[in-house]
Length: 531
Image 1 (cartoon, one colour):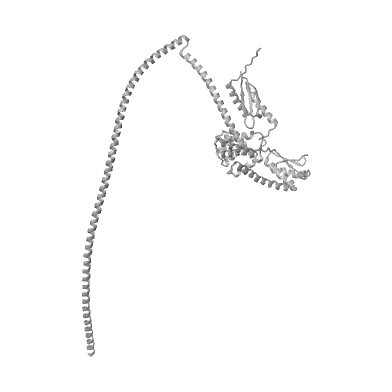
Image 2 (tube, helix red, strand yellow):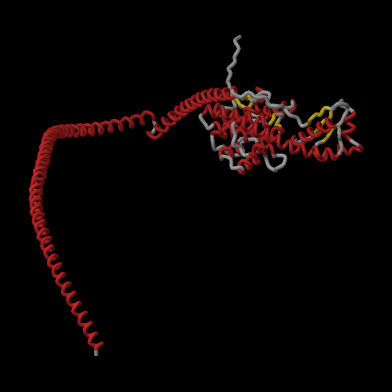
């Protein structure tokens, strides 16, 4: 019991203490709440006062801004009003000026209208006058027609000829007279044009030739190799001729060993093979070791060396004429022409000479100098391969130029420089002329006396084979033929046809370098003797 009482007493004491503590806390909380409420009321009053003050400030600022906005709007309104007034003034001014111009134009038009009215009245009067004159002319024309008819009837009566017959007679006489005058005028014009063209051509050609001065080496179909002594001939022949047989088989060149002291002759139509044989034999003689194996070794070595040398010859020639961008294969082929001759004229030197002459001619005529030189340089390239490829050198050269994509003008020049095809450019004609000049100039080519005399005789025989020809003479080393005709058999017009016929036969039946001039002479002589 006592324990329970103690426990209850303790609980009661705890409860009393807790109640007292709770009551104190509640009182303290009420005090804090009242202080917070007081503080909140103070802050609310302060915020309210600040809000009222800010509202008053904002109201003042709004009124200020409102005043400024009204002022700005007023200024803008005044500015726009001024601008509109200025525009109105400008437009009013322009309208006034336009009105003045229109007024002036109206005055001018009125003046023109008055002038046109006056002109119209004048034209009407002139038209009336012309109508009167036309009537008068018609009457006179009728009178003239009547008179003309009367005259024709009278003329027919007097001459016993109709008007058509008389007209035919007059027309025939007039036509004959005009034909003669036209023939004389044409002949005079042709003579004048020919003289001027001949003078101009001679001037151009002389200038071109003066700028080219080159000598052509006259090569032969044999080469001579000098020996240190005659005992070397036996070593060249070898035991039972094995050395000379091997040499001829490898080179394709005939070795002629005769009684000529200290010399051996190499004969062959192919200049390349002959040059290889000459180089090989000179090296064999210098070396002293002559046997088939050594011969075969040197022939192969010199064939390669000659290929390199031909390329150098071609490059040097191309550089000389300015064809720097020529295909390397074409340069090598052109180098082969160093060992090729035509009538004794070195073909590579001839090609360079033609290139220079063609370039000078092109410069005189205002054509492409570089292209003319290139075409002249390549015009005979086919001769380098005409021993190995079938066809003429013109056909071979044309195919080579097409193969290596040369300029079409160059291709046509090669194809037409011997008149096998028609030239389609001035450069083609210039190269053909340069080719003839280079071949026909004195000293360029060799020709045997027999061929020379035969060519002159053929030229005279062709000329005298035509009817009406009295005599013919070949002049200037066969570059001109003068034909004397019988005046009673051929007229002046017929000799022109004769000259063309002789020219055509010469071109078709003869081979000749350069050009041949055909001159036909007709003269009438009246001879009498005073006794």
